[in-house]
Each structure stands twice: as structure tokens, then as C-alpha cells.
Image (cartoon, rainbow, N blue to C red; front, side, top):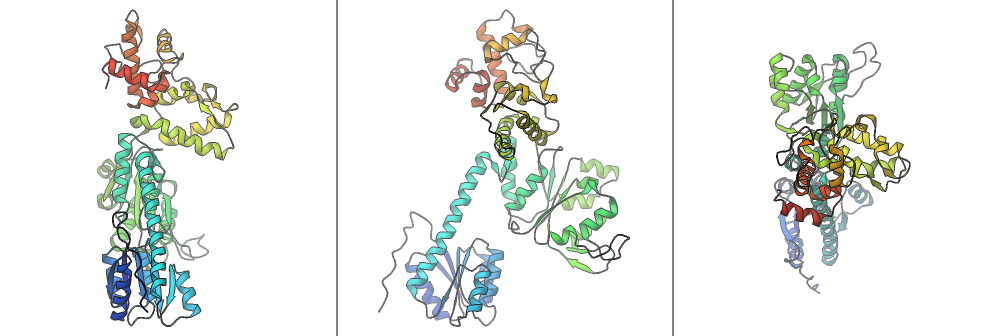
Length: 497
């Protein structure tokens, strides 16, 4: 008796799930595909293992249904190939030669399910629908994470400034590729974090991410760390040792401070990048490796090339794609976002309950130049959390380097207080200067405001606060001690952009 057709999915709700059916028996493969198409799936058929493997490489399938026993490639080989090429796809194995060992092997290698011939088509449709639901759920999670990343960061890369949005957009484009990446930026800007984000959003994410600081090791030790060594290669080599390249095989190797790598090691690294082989120290046996290289430096490598300390050919090998990370002072509007992130992260680590941060601390964090960048900001936040005793982070919790920020403004302090609701000035660096004041006010004092109408004074400080927060109106209103709607009205009144 013919089974009733399963209800078709509504194409207006979700796009059809692509299914690949692989079976040496063309008649059986077509029957499976026809049954699933009546249930709303989009089916494609391969009548050999090799054809199926090629279609997996060239297409994009959410569910793969493959016979276990085929004349060229068997179902377990198809499963392994699919997991490597389309890791998010679900694989269902079918066979007329069922056995407990083969079923166990299939499930251990990541098969979604294992069905026996003759197939119950209703059961097959139900299993395929469950596999498709798994794929849809993963898609929904990826989309949710994508939206969160667009607003708040990319796998831990935090920032909403125009500079960081550009960086995050660039990361999204290059992460899925195998291109070598060179990350440039000052110390403390988060180069290793960006390298990890690239790895975690790449097809290599299930393989190792290995980091090595090239500046911290001597030439001989660095080569041993990179390429490994064999027993007896040097005095302390009492056994064979796997190097970072071998350990990272299939994954990503992050070379930090690559500009400090000795020239001799640079030559050997170049050879590895050119032929994909390493040779352990003390050995003549080449070992094939498949590693993505991400490197980073705070040096100007073009100047190093001119000085003869860095090889030009290696430079071009490493910089297939370049990412420049802005310093924290170049993206001040991210300071308070980072502060909130670090407080949430570190308060859990130290068992602290933080109920708030005073406006004075916020202003000082915004005014400081952060020579140590994001790493220094994190250390400052951790220091304040550790010494805080009342749950409110205030100026008494500030470390020494920030304690003097905003002090010594002289008579301008009272003017600032009248606008912002605090005895602290809003302006730039320690020493009391407020750079870039609007309305023609002198940049190095508040003296030019004395005797001016209050409207003009208010306009000056609103403009300067907006500049200080990078145009973040919510934070500017908080610093000024007024509501956001009030700030919007004043921006319109004073015609501030």
C-alpha cells in the first residue's frame, strides 16, 4: 500500500533544505530523492561514491544521505569527506548490510543516523526532517551570533567605533579563507585576540590554534620550537620533540612579534611557506604540514627591510592580507564599552559585585591616552575591582597613573561643574587642557569663557563632551548629568553635529 505524501514545507517560511543522495543503485537513489522532494526537500543525486565526493566539494548541502557499501568510495569515506568539506552538514548512512560494528563506527565518526534497507520512506523522511532541523537551528544560532557580532564585536573583538567596525567587517571576509594574515598595531591592541577570532571563524576552527612569541626566544630555541628536533640534535635533546608547525597541523600558527625573528630563521620559515614541509632540527627527513600562518608585529616591517633586518620575500609571503588595529586613543568611543565588558568578566573572576561606576571615573578613563592600549585598560579595570570595597567604582579606586588625570584645571573647574554636575573637568589630558574647544575658546585654559553668556558656555561643553565620547550621545548625556532627550534638544538648539 502506498504511503501518503508527507506535507510539503511552506517555501515562504524557510528556503528548502538541499539534500544529496549518494547510491550506486540509481533506481534506489532516484526513489529516495523523489520521496524527499514530495516532502519539500531539494534533492540532488550521485550514482557513485566518487561523484558524490566531487559534488560535496562543489556544492552546498545541508543533509547527505549515502549508501554504506559502494564499489569505489564507501559511506564511511563519504562521511569523513563531508565532515571535512561541509562540517555543518548532517550525514545519514543507509545499507542493506547492517551490523553493530559498522553502525557504531558511523556514529562515532559523526553520522546523524544509520538506517537499514529496505527503507521505510516515512521513517527516512522523519529522520531527514530532524537532520534538517538541526541544520536550521545551527543556522539560526549563527545568524544570531552574526547580529550580536555586528553590534558588539566579532568573537570577543569588542568595539563599536567606526575603526573597529571596519576591522570586524574585514575579519568576516578573510576568516573563511586560508590566506596568510599580517596584523599590525601597537603593543596591547589585541593582536592575538584578533588572530584567535580569525581561527575560530575559519574552516580550521576544530584544529589547533598555536601561538608563539618570536621575540622571547633565542635563535636556536626558536627553531626548535617552530620545527621540532630529534634526539641528540643538541646537548639537551634527550628525546624527539614535535614543533609548533607539526602541533598546529591542519590548524593555525600565530607568530607574534615576527619582526624580531632572526634572519636565519626567516629563511627557514620562508622555505616552509613555499613548499609546505618542515625539517626537524638534527634530521634530514621532510615532514608535510598544512598550517595557516597569522603573524603580528608592532614594528614597521618596510623600514626593517630597508635596514636589512627583515627579508622582503618573507614579508610579501606573510602579508597576503593586512589588518591594522587602531590604538585605543584612536577609538575613544569604545573605552566605555570595553570597560563594561571587563567589569562583567573580571567581577565574576574576583567574586565582586559591582553596582556602578562613578561619572568621574568614566571621564578620567575617557580622558586618558592609554599608551598600553586595551591591555592596559583591562589591567586598570582589574586593579580597581580588586581594591574596591563598596561596590561602586570611584576615583579612590583609581591606580596611580590615572589618579592625576583631570586635576589642576584651576578656575575652569567650577565652570565645568556647573554644566556637568561634577567638580571634574570634561577635557583632554592631565594638566587641565581641553583640546579643540568650540566657539573660539582658547584650547589651553577656560579663561576665555569668563564673562561669556551661559548659553555659549553650555554649547562649548556639550560640543567638547560629544567630541570626547566620539559622538556617543548616550554617554555624553551621562557625563553631563542630563537626560538624553534634553541633550538632543540642546544639540538641535546649538546646531551641533
